[in-house]
Length: 109
Length: 258
Image 1 (cartoon, rainbow over the protein chains, first blue to last red):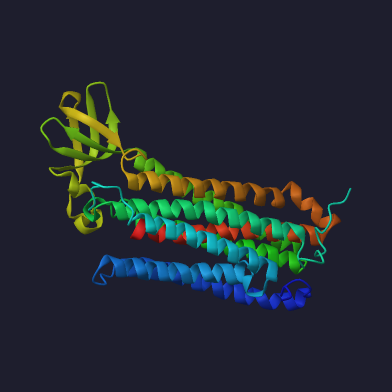
Image 2: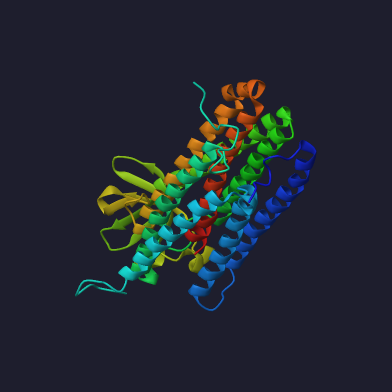
């Protein structure tokens, strides 16, 4: 895929600025929603954590896709990120797996 | 000797070299923060819910800092867009805004750190606990602005307790004090991971601000000689800055709200 911004004229480029501003407003709104949602009792804490992380992932996606231009990058960047994702996921899985591998007589809550 | 592919894309990757380099660097950063986030999960899940703090950080201050960082992200991208549109004056303006916002973020963070280092939990010889901010400290007397509790568990969930606990000035004689410890990283595992994550993040903010400051100041001379190469430098520093913003987007709810 060709990088979207590589060969654009200044006039063509000005169109993207409006998009960046829209993303900025969405991020501001997302922050206020995150704070607001943390005060709503959804029944149990797990749901609150899920909602907060869902909003955080949405905001992070906006930053990555538009500000970091991942919507229109070269294949190589996607390749680097795919490997990073696999290793980061593996790291989290190792952490979660460790919960079921506690030594004997470990005090758990 | 000229460094190859600083402006023109390399035929095999289709990208200029610095862009590949910064993405590889960001990949290593994902693993660094990923490891610390997994440490947070481990500590959080391993702790009893009643003993994990809630409301120890000031949410309005954290929200303002989040808004500051998000605003710095848009000024960074606008600085890069200004270079692309051949508007060097606008670039200077937007990057100056980014530097000021970065410094604002660090100042607010420092204030929060100061708040924690002056917050004390004091166990008295009669078994009560005095918790509050240090007002003054002398050889025979300590004065704090806070409250008394009889059970340490009362200190953990401040959001549930709310503002119903009236705080007052408490004067304590040294002879009354059994132990006295501030809310530094040594006080609780939550604070240990809080200071580690936010401290590392703040170092990234300072490092990014330093690079952006260079491009705004002495580094901007390159614009006259080679504007395309300069624009690429701005893009690279911007990618790092957006990553720093991205990390904070997760840190804020995890440390302040949950």
